[in-house]
Structures are given as C-alpha cells and as structure tokens.
Length: 483
Image: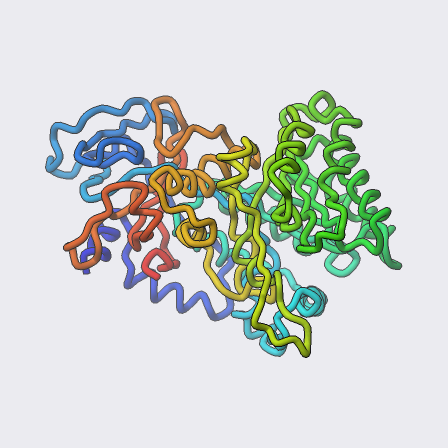
C-alpha cells in the first residue's frame, strides 16, 4: 500500500509494528516502544498556511528551525539525515491540553471487564471509575498509560497535560506511574503532570486526607499543575472553598492551575467562573505566580451566556492568563441525557463553543480529548485531529479560517494554553522549535490529494510522521497511524 511504503521509508515498518502491538496485549515489557532519529533537513514539502503549489525545504539546527527556503531539488536521491517530504504537508505538531492518563482504556482492559456501562450517565461514570480505582495497580496503570502516550505520539502529539488522580483510594499510585512515564517518554513528548483532585477536598469523610495527599504530591519533583473539581463538592460554599484552596496550592508551590468547572446546563445555577476570576484578582495571581497559566475545562454552563455576559466576563478577566478548554466528546456524551420516564426526543447538549469564544470575544482557548475508553467517554481515540474534524459540524465551523482555527486549537493554541509554547498560528516559522507533523496529503489510492490545512481538518489523513525537537519519532509497536 502507498501509505505503508511512505511510512516504511521513514523508519516505520507496519507489519513489524502490528506484530509487536499484538504482543503488547500480553504481559507488558514495560519499555518504550518509541525511538527517534536525528533529521537535519526536510525537503520538498508543502507548508500549512502557504501557497499549496509551492514546495519548501526546512533546515534544522540544534532542535530548532534554522531556515525555510524554496525547494529546487524535489527528487534528489535520499541522503543521511534528510527526510523526503514529497506528497506531504508540514504543520505544527499536536497537543493534548487536557487528557486523563490513569483512567484511560478501562473498557479495553480485561481486568475491568465486569465494569460495563449500563446507564451511560455521569453518576454511573463516577461510580464505575471509583470501583476501578480501587483495583488500580502499578502494572495496569503503566500498561494503559503507555498505550495512551504511544498512540498520541503516533497521531502527532508532542506535548500533553496528563491528569493523574491523588486521593485516599489511589494515594500516589497514579502519580508514581505518571512521573515514570513522563521520564520514559521525555525524548519523544513533553508530558506535564497534573496532580488532580477528582474527589471532593472539603466534603465527605476523606476530605482532610485528600488535602494532605494533594499537598504532598505538589512537592514531588516533576509535578507541574494543580488540578481540582469544585463541582463535586456538596454545596456552593464548599465549591468556593475548593477554588480558594486550589489557588492557594498553585501559588504556594509555583504551579499552573487547571480546574474542571461549571459542568452543567442548569441556568438556575450560579456559574463559579465569576467567583474564580474575582479570587484570582484578589490573590494577585499575575504578580504572585508569574508565568503560570490557568486552564478551565468543560464550562458547559457558559454555553447559556448572552453576548453581554460573555463581554462582561472578558472584561473582568482582564490580564489573567486564563484559557478555556472544550472537551466535546465527553461533553456531548454526558450532557442532556433524559431522566427515566421521559420520552427522550429532546436532548439538550452543550459543549463550549471555543471557535466563537476565540473569534468573537477574544478569549484564549483550545479543545482536547479528555478521556478515552472509559465510562466518561467510551468512544474516540488519542488523535486530537479527529476532534478538530468533528468540530466542523459541532461548531458549524466550515470556512477556511474556521478550519485553521480548529487546527490551532489542537496545536499552537493548545500548547500556549498549558504553557508549552506561544501561539504562532497554523504555520511553522524560522527560529521555532522543530516540532511538527508531516501529513501524507495523497489518499491511499493516489487519486485525491489534500493540499491545504483546511483539507487536512476536513478529512484527516492516515499517514503521519512526527518530529520532536528535530528528531523523527519512530513508532515500533503502535500502528494507530493507520486506523
């Protein structure tokens, strides 16, 4: 097949990958299935954001882009350290701004086969996940987390914020494995670790222990982010205390802050985002936690805002480094499920309209995968580009600029949201870090091409080659690039 030949020329033997991937379903070897090789130049490629009829050479030096020049030798013989980019489009690499590392692929793991979805609602998802957490062990956390990282890298992800839960049930099991995977894959992907309080830290009998464990976790080397879920608290007052506590922890230990916030579609509930913004200003975040960012995930309640409410929120945020991250696959699965006895003909759905939030109101935003293969989000994959493509219909975003914005939301905007770089648009530039993806722009039959980033978003190609800090990432045991 044409795609298989393309990948093999870049060091990816799909037959060998399939054999090893099948073997990895048996007891894991607990080693990285990813390697890399140095590249000095990528030749003859199209560049996202530029004339699709032109071809370019990209030179790489010291893990950065040294130069971008017109290509005058599109079919020169292969040379060591030179990547032939013919029939490829080069664009910035992808990013997971929000993904859960510890509870991924529970529905795929035989260990949890008895924890099947029966209702498909949020309460059941919490219950099934809590039961699964009681069984978590180092071995299966490492196995499933490795699947997630490697399939993400296969899709072109070079940066991710990975949530790992810390509470009285799992204590530091998830954190230990997350930090280990961060180190294992450091040469192919930057992994931010978010110590995450999924459970309440002020409600219930284990709240005090949860606070203690979280504070211990935040002092561990390699932990980058404080994460919390105010809406699981028993009252609005306790939600506010949760927010204050999370801000205090982030500022005390110099961490980014990431909150699951306002996850409802109830117009009668006061949005907690207003209290959060006021609390951040009161604590003088921009002075006391300089260069650390704030991410707000879900925020489905904000889909009920009027234009004036959005404008007021933007004015109140002022210079706070806040980004909103929409999580559409989870939001649409969880939101609007009818109660027992209802006809079910009308199902109100809601996910934050990130393109509108960016383009109309001037906020910073991104979209992400969130969960994959568990009761919160049983469907989907580790490929952010699939989320962007789905966004064309979810957000009714079909123009050329919309498509570029959708790509930025899983790439440069996503990286900027979590503090892994600056938003530089949909194209690569001289002097930037050499982190990008080569997309095979021809279909498998060779009859239809994808010449622009717009077409990549409309119809994500199968063949991809990722570069991280000037090195081609070779995937030895994951064939998800062909799925």
